[in-house]
Image (cartoon, rainbow, N blue to C red; front, side):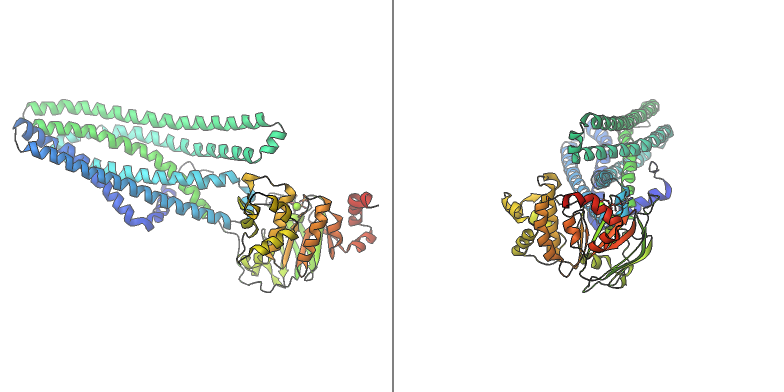
Length: 587
Ligand SMILES: Nc1ncnc2c1ncn2[C@@H]1O[C@H](COP(=O)(O)OP(=O)(O)OP(=O)(O)O)[C@@H](O)[C@H]1O
Ligand SMILES: [Mg+2]
């Protein structure tokens, strides 16, 4: 990705979109900017006041200054403090609101993206956009705006004041500025490069560590601690080097700018001193001028260093906007699948993953009647899970059509389709929440405790859930993976039972269970399967035998179908599979 430079149209577009996010908080934003301007002006007024203080108060010994000066200082400092608080607080408020909006929008977008996006993107990267990048946008935006308004406000005030005091001296001083501009430009270019490659390096750190942490078992058991640590160390070193490049640029540019400015200052000092000595300038005005000249260095320094911050903030913002611009999962269907009977037809369905040369589903045609149980068998990688994914519309078929109750899948709204589906997938996902909330996840209807107990009972999960410290209120999930694979599967089955939808997909739903538990669940599942069209991917004979139709898949193709007895007497692929898997055990 060429994200290192955000210039021209792309940069101004990003600015505009970012600004659009502040529109909701416009009042606070405007007040904050105003407060910053007040702050800047007061800073200028302080220096400005040097002239009368010295000329009138010190040299002419005007006694009213004894009162005016302290009151003046106290009042201005009080106003400045209030302005500082108001601007800091409001900018922080606007910034955090914008981040919250961005985070919510990007997360909602993630939830809308097609499955193919998740296949091709690392979860660590996606998460770090929500955390690291979003925060960066806020910090940058608040800092940048504060600095720009405050410092350029101050700069303008100072320049006008200086010009009014002495055009000659001011212009003389300003001659040194182009020198500074050259240095600033050089630094900015380097900074942009360094900042974006630093973000990539941070992505590596996140990915490697989150993989190693969630996969800690694999790491430990394979004795891979050293190997993964050295990969991680490499990423950390990369990040450090890139960060140091950034630090070097940042720290070299400010002193350089100051040096050039100071050189200019000393030239001006020479001329202005001679103007004082020849009586053209009062001592007070001279002092104010010198203070102004020195004071200019701060805004210059801040304004030059802010540019790098803005760049990295813009890059972070753009990476979020790029996500927001992605296309959603296709959901063009408008038809509702109401009172779905369970009549399903697949006609010449093929699916080709862009990353693969072979089709994962190859010209697959198949029909089933409502209430039937369809078992899918086939070797690993033959396309069983993919077939279910296509039927759930997680992937769009490259060609062919799927009909639900004679309505083409494309014409059915996704929400309506999925309301009709309960899934127990090959990889059970439990969220970091109570068992109860996991079981009712996604349900729109109210569920009472009895129903939950009932479902747990059917899934043979009640016994172990009751033994957990808080029963159904016990938290489960990835962070607290104390449940066994079989227990997790039983919870997933209970979840599917609660969903009570006309179409049931079970992908190796009982693979992690021993034969005895499986047999017990089988009874519960059979009760659930009544009046439901069920697709089961299974290896166990007990499950397959009950099926009305057995589909045998090989390399994405349907190579055989029929009942157990039909297929056995056919002596084909199923018979061979059966012989291999169950032959010896059952003879
Ligand atoms: N998202 C994807 N992107 C690219 N290829 C994929 C994707 N999902 C699956 N595949 C490939 O499609 C083929 C079928 O995979 P699938 O998961 O459907 O097999 P399966 O029959 O369910 O196997 P198993 O019994 O091991 O679960 C495999 O070659 C797999 O590598
Ligand atoms: Mg599978």
